[in-house]
Image (cartoon, rainbow, N blue to C red; front, side, top):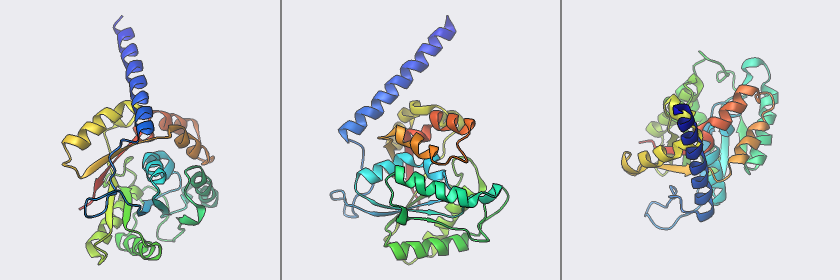
Length: 260
């Protein structure tokens, strides 16, 4: 009997959470993070999403991408490697281009690097100065005024995710472009990470009450698009990643925090 109560409770929470996502997407009542500096009306921004590997955008950032795209932001993706750990970097690069089409990011605004010092792999540390230099060049070339990337844990703990974060921090320390804002995707505990849409309640409360207005949450207005985008990464679309995308809270909500 106790197990039945638990199962029913979980199902009710999932349904309520999915309804919440649907309601927010229809009402367009989400808090807008990208206001102009005077705090006035919402304005379009040139946004650079900095990731480490092809598929990071689909596994972790789709709520943010969908939100920005639907609000008319000009989104660029800078991927620091081809994900060549298994020798299929060229394949994964093309898969990212296909996923960007699903996510409504123009292919010409997706850049994938294959730098000899930025190769995919656990234990392969990336130099923050090199990363900062590359990011700065992209900011200048594309007139970027807002950067989004991983936080210092990198959601999954992958060292390359963490390196990308350090590269953005290095940029903020060194750059003369003070008008550029940077935001990081907040990592959560493993329990929250695999709670699916149920995590939206705790994420919204955390952003509202505990982070003093420097964090915002984006509900995924198109959860099916996340699955469709990840499915374009056919070389990575194995059974455990299908489970991850279905049950990951990052499919349903992103909380981003301003990097100071």
